[in-house]
Length: 357
Image 1 (cartoon, rainbow, N blue to C red):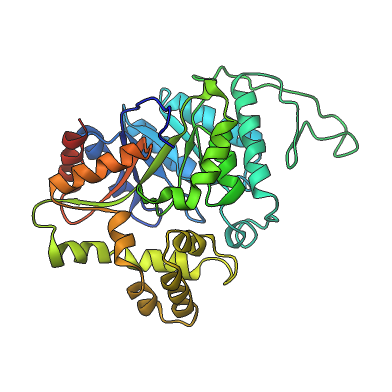
Image 2 (tube, rainbow, N blue to C red; image 1 turned 90 degrees about the horizontal axis):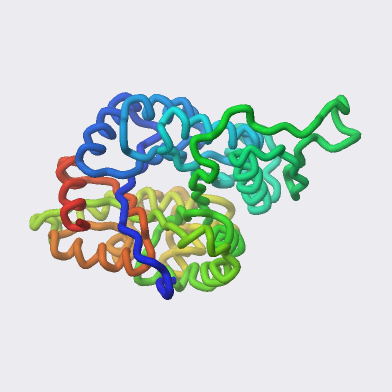
């Protein structure tokens, strides 16, 4: 993954909580912007929409990048996503990053009432339509899941190619793809500007995604540059974060990992469980799922491997964190996604900024 790539300085990014107090989060983002945070991601799922919140953030900040982390490719048309991205890029002065993903059938079919079909092809179609729209080309596209204008024989018959009225601030807004496994990761490495993985272990990620990333990169347009990667986890920096205190912080991640590895998808089709197994935690992944699906959520959380917790988070003294950051850089991570815990968030980001700079 690192062979032949140019060196890009690592940015600091953070995902805000979609179920929290947004106004409090905005104040935190403003404070963290001054401390050195480079990018804030706003998730959506089936909470308040991310777009209105990003518009508010654009008005309240001045230099931090703002991104969707993520919006799905089913509840909005491809050209609507393109319009929305161009609009947010305009109101933010060129600071927007488009994070796209497929979400899952529970949200797409259960909340939006749309069939969950061809997710990988759909994201690729959306990427193509967005880039076409931003270049102010007439949108004429016949893809696997998107056809614009509406094909002959459908609708009123009055459809004709149109191009966006406004002149976008940028004609190539960065697009990050949240992909999990297989061909979708290959497509991410080939078509997207950036990748949003989960449970990223910088020393062992090749075991999970190495072949797919290599295959996609081999067919990547050289003009698009290096695939950017946003990955990380909880962050707590200090000499006090050793032994039991370090473990207490790491244990905070157990319920969330157990939810994904144990409770997402069907028993035989849980990509998060597959990721865990590919890392080498086969028995643990099976136990987590068995316990979670039987209702023993605390037992599932307890079964999460301690090594996985330590390798996918940044908790410890400054010297140890510096070594971990070097591993992330070596793995090609360009955006360190941080979730400050165990102390003041501003001070944590300032410490990270000092180590990175």
